[in-house]
Image (cartoon, rainbow, N blue to C red):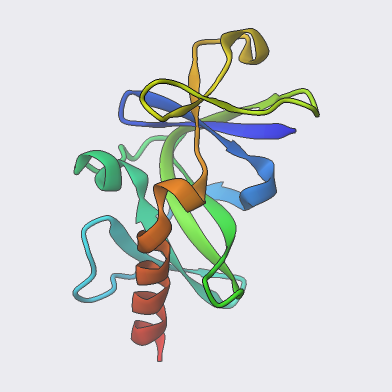
Length: 151
């Protein structure tokens, strides 16, 4: 199992490659009127308008720093209507991946946070980023706003 590592403020996260469509450089986005601050706007991804969420604003209200390691992670999600949608997630320090053993399963700590064990990652403890857990209502709201604006 392959994971992409990234940062949100001072915390480090790992996202399973099974969610990822593509990782692209940080781009400026087209604003969506009356959207929440964490929705930075939309980008044109292969002819389709894709909403983009700044994870740093969502978690801590301060935007991701615009640096070389800041990227837009395009993920594929399945909505409540069983539709496949693409959204972009802006994150910092998107520079490395780790490969986990096939039979590895995440565990939950006392605070209810998924973490990658140090002995498996060879590093500090990392939080497992599961879009369905971190972004449940936000995903549908973001997609709805984007579709309303595009039409």
